Image 1 (tube, rainbow, N blue to C red):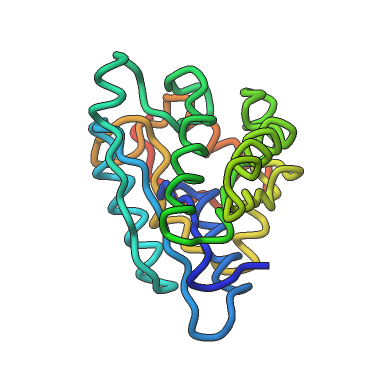
Image 2: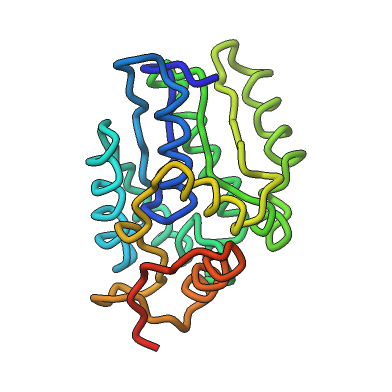
Length: 213
């Protein structure tokens, strides 16, 4: 499915995208590496997420491309474009993020964009539903013959199921970052921390995360 140099991976530094990175790495031809992309919103937590993303890539290889969308978000006085688990982000942020990834894929001649969305993301935001993604994909294909496919292998899975899959691949979840705050350790109280903690509990896995509360 994955196609080496023609594959982009949307990487946030969180456990879902870390699982996705390991899955895509296993599907690539020997010696090939996907280009991982991080959308930088100018939020203080960016540094923590970028550090986590680089740590993940350090285990599997590959490079991290950072696309800065800070000025756009400042212009519309908005929150980050991609943030799940009840944390604030700009309305239609998922569609904006996937549009940016689609354009980047066209410019970089990439045939596919992998995104680690899961079922609970869809339950929270319908813009993450497969039919919404299909509309975006079709819109791009109507204008460009080289528009990429947007691949969402976890969309029918719960977060717990994604974590179980990652555990079977020895994903180093201790290296990942979920918290909406940029503290030294996870706060344990924000929506992202609660979803992380619940995911590990539902999966029956030991949670390697240090929480403040």
